Length: 278
Ligand code: R5P
Image (tube, rainbow, N blue to C red; front, top):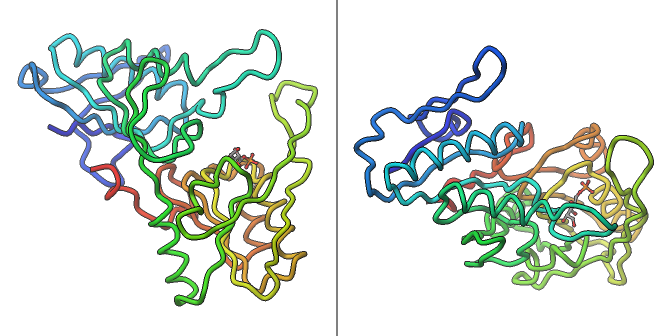
C-alpha cells in the first residue's frame, strides 16, 4: 500500500492529510488507517524544503502507523542533515545520526532515499539504527546530459572525492575540494576555498556531477576550474538542487547547462527520480 504526502503531489495523488493547527503545531491524519493493520506500507514524503516541519510530520505519520502495527518504509528522496555526519569542533551535534535514530524509533522499518550524502555509495546500509536503501540518480543524470549534448563524448568529473562514486562507473575523475573555517555570524557556513584538479579537460565536453548543489560554492569553483582548463562545453548537474544564494542564476551564466533530479523541486529539476523509488 502506498501512502502519499501532499508534498509528493507532483508525482502521485496524495492520500495523507498534513495541515497546521492555528498555533502552527503540525496536524497529520491517515484516512482509512484501520485497513493498514499489520500491512507493509510505503510512505512517500519529502523531507525538504521546510525540513524541520517535514521531519516532524514524518515522525508523527510513522508513529501513527506503528500504533496499528504497519511495517513502514519511508520513501524520502533527499535526507536533510545528511551532511552533519561528522563533527569538527567540540560539542557539535551528530545530526545525521540523531535524525536516523529518531526515524527508526518512530517506526521507520527502512528509509529509501537517493544519493544520501554520508553513504557515498549505492546499496543497503545501516546508520544510526536505521536501515537505509540508498539509490543513485547518477545514471539518469548522465543519460540526460548525453541527450542534451546529442551523445557527444562526455568527460565526467565530480567536484570532490566524496562524490567520486557518482562518476567512477563512467571512467570519471574527481577534483579535490578545500573548505575554509566556519564564518562568524548566525549562519553556520564554511566557504569553499578552492577546487583543484590535475587532469586535462582541454577541448572536452565536461559534465560536473555532485550529489547536491546547495549554496553553489562547490560547483561554481569546479566550473571555473574546468573553464580555465579549456573545456569546450561545461554542463553541471546534481541529484539534489537547493540553489541557495542565487546560485542557479550564477551557474547558468557560467555554464552551457545546469540541471538536477526532482528529489527537491526547483526550476532546474529536469530528471524524474520516481523510477528509482518504486
Ligand atoms: C559536499 O561534500 C557535497 O557533496 C557538496 O559538494 C556540497 O554539499 C555542496 O554544497 P555547496 O553548494 O554549498 O558548496
